[in-house]
Amino acid sequence: MRIGWRKGLDITDNIFRVTLWNTPIFDVGSPEWVGIIRKLPLTDKQKRILAATQASGFINSDYQEINKVDSDTAYREIHEMVERGFVVHKGRGRGAKYYVILPEKINVELFTERFPILRKLLSTQKTMSNTEYRKIFGLSRYQAFP
Image (cartoon, rainbow, N blue to C red; front, side, top):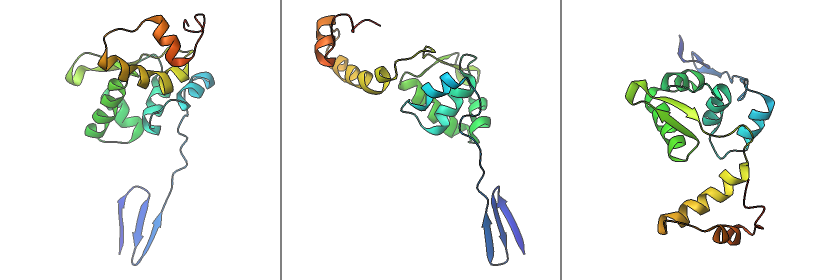
């Protein structure tokens, strides 16, 4: 008796075989962009969609197709990227399209190290001076400007 109930899993009598697919995580996008995406604090699936769609944007079904996930999982993972500030959405519901809001030449340190500190600080106070910013991150007045 042979049962093949999942792609990559084959059960014959009392023997099973698992096939692991050798699929590259990043098979699209410019090498520079992929290098930037690799350093971001995101899951492999989230990185894959950003690498694949760079500036063109994506919808929920694109995320599902590229990452082989259901619509609920896609929604949760996309929503996490929106909350963390990596993508912005235009439209609502089924018509929502998501766009990467990272510039092509991103300072990865800004997203991985500084933003969490800034979010925490700005949740307790409404503004921050340039002097405060420089003091927190140990920067000169010239380094504080991109």
